[in-house]
Length: 249
Image (tube, rainbow, N blue to C red; front, top):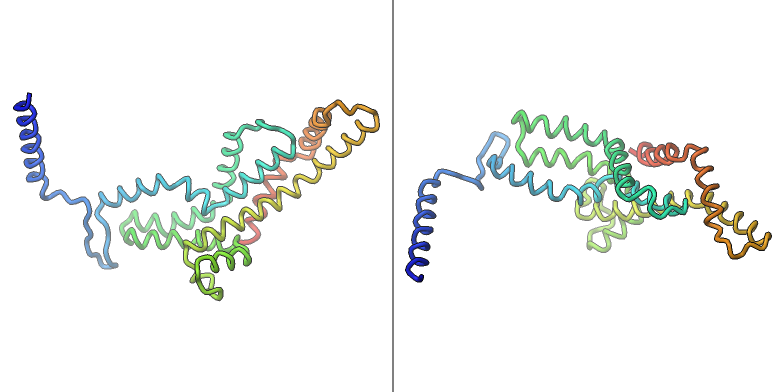
């Protein structure tokens, strides 16, 4: 048994050695100089691209309008008194489609100024990433509040008088997320008020009729749904969310 293990080990070592000898010219992590600087090996570019794809959900939530939209939709569902309808997957789908629509100018800028020159080998990968970050930074700066920016700058130990273009990306992203949370809850509060009034009216009517054992939600839910549908609520919410972004940048 021990001889078999030793022979198997020697065989594996021989195969590994022969593969290493035959693969001496195969380069994975390498750089080569170009007229515009240094560029990465194609295999390394593919590796970096696959790594970025794994970070795509986090980038989607941290640098786009997705966070504000999904929070507003979740608060709207709660205001209507619906627990699981629309389900979470439907809300995420709506938020994702609205995000793609609202962020369309950013995607077009990245495609025209970063992806197409990179594809035609006019710029390097590093230059393409720098160009792609410009419209994203512009979008986030337009939506970031001053109070949140100053707070994150204090946490990071950065000077509070930094110009917007000098703010590091690792400071801008949390400031942007805090601003999105604040804006989303403000919009959600405004959406909550009409449905809260309906709940109060229904509860008052039931109390005056002596029906204290009957839950007001059972009576108010059809009225809230009727008002929301008659007012074309989904279109109004989508239009309002889009307007909160489009007017600022």
